[in-house]
Amino acid sequence: MGERMKLRAIPLVLSSVALTVLVGCDATSDVGDEDAAASVLSQDPLVARALGDPLMVDPDLSWRTEANAAITFQDGHPLPPFEARSDAASRAVEAARVELLSGGPIPSLPLEAGGEGAPALGGLQTAGAILQALDARPDCIDRMDARLDWSTQLPETSSIMPHGMVRQAAGVDTGNCVIRVVRYLTPASMDDVLEYHFAKVDRARFRVDRFASPEPQLRADRRDQAIAVHVREGPGGMTAVDVIHWRK
Image (cartoon, rainbow, N blue to C red; front, side):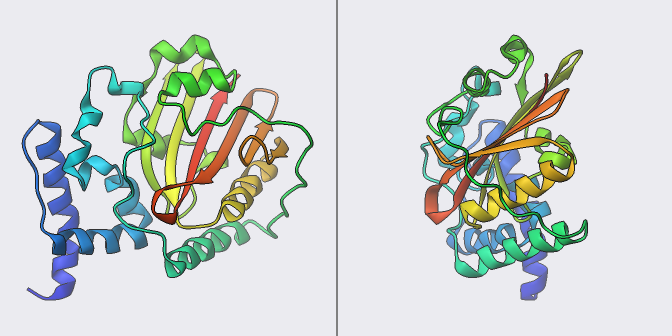
């Protein structure tokens, strides 16, 4: 089988590994498969979104299936399956700018507001704790559940950056409780990430504030909705991003 056919087979191999982990069986993969998988994940945002959860490439993360994991966010385990490289960052930024330019000139980031923004989110382990830190509909926390496909149900105004790799996602869409909490990694810089998300919310006519402390972040508000984007240094030289979108 040619090299191209081997690469095409990787998503099926990873899917099989993911299924094995989820049913509680041991899963292993050789170094060659992991290197090839990293190449695919770093270049194809659709594959990254579908297969990006660490459970699918690292059996050591099976602890994420613990009880009450539905809204658990662990942020300190070794990640991601590939490291940030300058070429990967360039591809991500280029793809983001092509997307944004299709809607017109890219707006510049606003100046940082004085004072402090919302608390830093990096050390928080649950979606509920994140919502409470942002004062974002704590009455809906008990209704939330965690599934990667919540990341595909983000509105256009808060969609993840191209070539982003989803780590965790939780959400709810019941009655007046409409919330998305998504964490992803990208090789792009923090400023590039903020520029991307700012352009999205600015074009949707949100009022946006940018803060540098206690961590770089955007807070966007509109009459019926709010969005928070927080960024920080992630593992492997990546940028870690939290996107929270909720209906008020």
